[in-house]
Image (tube, rainbow, N blue to C red; front, side):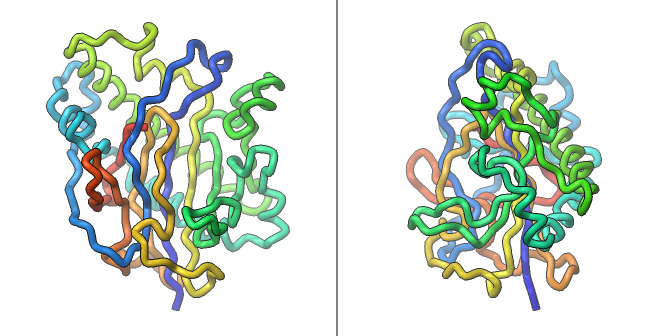
Length: 307
C-alpha cells in the first residue's frame, strides 16, 4: 500500500525593476510550514470571502481584509466557491505522481541547475532546518503565465530563479503544461481581485500606495509569477527519517512574493484518491504572538497568503 500527497502553490512575486517597472519592497509575512506532524496545535479557521463578493470591485470587504491580514490576523484568507477551481485543482494534482514517476533520465533533462532548481523538476536539492537534504518531496516549478519572462540576458544572469524560461515535459507528459497554466492563471486572477480589495482597505485608512504603485498594479505588472507543484513521496520510499517536529516535512519559512496562493492537498493510495490519512497533515502558521496554529485547507477554496 502506498500513500502519497500533492499540493500546488502559486506566487505572485517580485520582478526585477527593469522587467516590470518601478521597484516595490516586499512586506514581511508570517512564518509557516506545510508538514506532517506528531504534535497537535489548535486549529483556527481562516477568514473566508465568497468569490461572488470578491469579484465586485466596489464591495466593502475591509472588515474581512483586516480580520484576515491585519495586525491580529493569521495573514491568510480563503476564497470560496471559485468557478472551475475544484476541477482544475484535481486535474493538475493528479499529474504530480506521474511527474515524479517519470524515468530518471527524463527527470534529469527537466532539471535546471542554472536557476538553482527553481524551474522544472527539483528533488533532494533543498535543505530542511536540520541541514539535511529534503527527499520527502519533489517539486515542479514554472511560470504559469509566461514561458519566457524576459529576453534580457543581463536580467536572466542576475535573477536566474525568476527570469529563466520554463521547461516542460512536452514529449513525455504534455498535459502537465496545459493543466499547470490553467490552474495558475485562475489563481493569479483570484489573487489580483484580493489585491484590489487590499488596496481599497489601505486607501480607506489614509495610506497612499507606495511609490505611486498599488499592490494590484505590482502583481499585474510582474512578469515573474512562480507556480510550484509539490509531490510528497510515500514515506516508505524515502531515505530520509521523519522527525517529530511540526516542521519536519517542509520547514518553517516565509515566502518572498507579494501574494502566495495555495490549494488543499490531494492524497492517493494505489492511484485512487482518498481522504487525508493523517489528521496532523496540513498548513501550520506561527502567529505574531508566537503561537503555532493549524489552518485547515478545503478542496473548494483558494487560499491566499500575504507575502
